[in-house]
Image 1 (cartoon, rainbow, N blue to C red):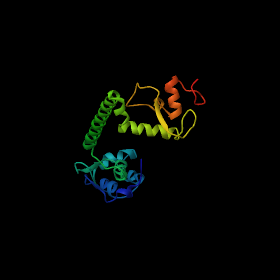
Image 2: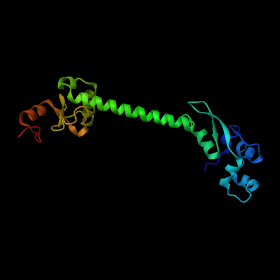
Image 3: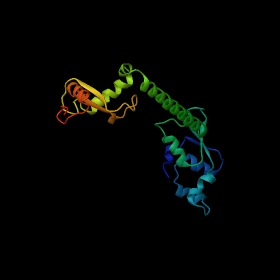
Length: 197
């Protein structure tokens, strides 16, 4: 459990009007001292039940409701969340659901686009933004050199298979210089030295 009560002094308003609640939520008194004063035979972890909940001065990013917490560690998590907005449990559930729906929509659109690319005329496919990105990525992986003869002249990106056209994997593409590419298409294979057998 995080113990830095100073972090929320003045940021939490206890919902119970008891000495324990006030000390638990509005001072930096360590749990050991609180337990010694109010423990009555129970463990330190049970103090939060006796102290009750507190309203934080941190508002939900969506519904603007103030955070209600039942433990110092939860209060600190809300305070230190910092990098991302705090959302109450209902708004967080709705936010996750909306994010999931958006991701599913994106995947569906990508699958539909891949299917369109797969069946469009090849010259049109070669002019698509998707092919330009995959081609560029293949050239970068090959360090702008032919993967057979290491030439850095005019380079082509050759499809080893068209089975995944539109959603090619890196292994589906080979970077070839114009000469090696012509030899491959003439003889159907590549030689180690860049010449077809």
